[in-house]
Length: 291
Length: 183
Image (cartoon, rainbow over all chains, first blue to last red; front, side, top):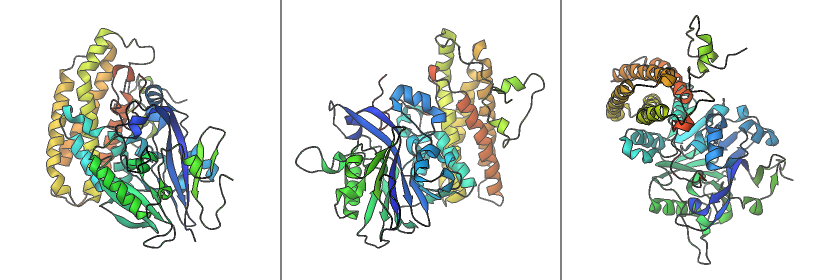
């Protein structure tokens, strides 16, 4: 019996993204659509999310003008077709501290947020470096840390040190230090609540952008890392192996949220606003949102 | 009806709002508003001089916020303490640079808002710097300082001028989401 339903919810997209930004070293390989998504995980007892996107109010016009991000919608709009309001969400797992993953914490007034302590402490280190080293804090927004401080003030922030089993029942957080960022984490949903699980799903954040990161581009299967590693490529590839091992090397059970082809792998529906819902799995007795 | 700019409230009398008051969320009294010709040499020179301090002030706020989180939730405050010294040094450098800038008249309010933000930040840095070892009542102090930093953060956001390269977040480098800037 599956405990959780999982949906990938698109909240914006880039129509023309360079392939080299999602696959390391894939220069001059053209462009593709890159959806921006977060993940909704729902059981009878919990409504959880993986990441929260960014807040268009802060940077929206700049981002859309400069980086061609289109069609941003608020969490209230994106969650509405699922019958969920942002205030219903109780747990949010932040995979890493980039602005497009933790830039909209304010939208979820009742949720407890989980982030790796290392992600925070290493960003602190990065911010303390001389100006000439500011590349080390690429794509992070100091005001997101300020918002996190306010979450801590409200008792709604959990600092995770390494791996954490059962952050909520059946959902484990796995640390991936020095990979895409200093303190990334990936989320393993054990949908049968068993360990090891035979019904597991991995929400990998930006450790895996697209299916090519898992299966390569040619006939010889191999992992190809994502296009940005503040840590090391070695750590990224070895984390990919760890992720794959956790789902018995079944690629379909690793969900790359920036992958447009999710709609070809999972039942999906494009809403009138042009954004997609992909239904990864349904809990027992749960109604489909895409049928 | 809610005024669109704080300075609309200011003449006279000037009103001081509590941090939690919604009026406090209004942007600072910017005179670099819509219609400002951002290609003026004096503005460009001002922004060029300002940017290192503007960026660093954001990083100081971020570091303080992160240290507050660690002080509240982590067990490493003592281990992280040398970081506080770095923040203090950065804050001093930033204040020195901000005071050395002579803004053009068009940007005088903009500059003044940042000086106020810097002063508020320095107060927090100094007060926090006196709180080791961890002692009773630290949580309440952190609450107050967090709110104070939120005001500073809003000022910094309000002082962002995209056309002059003053943005709280550096988008200039590539990653998944921003790797294909068609600039």
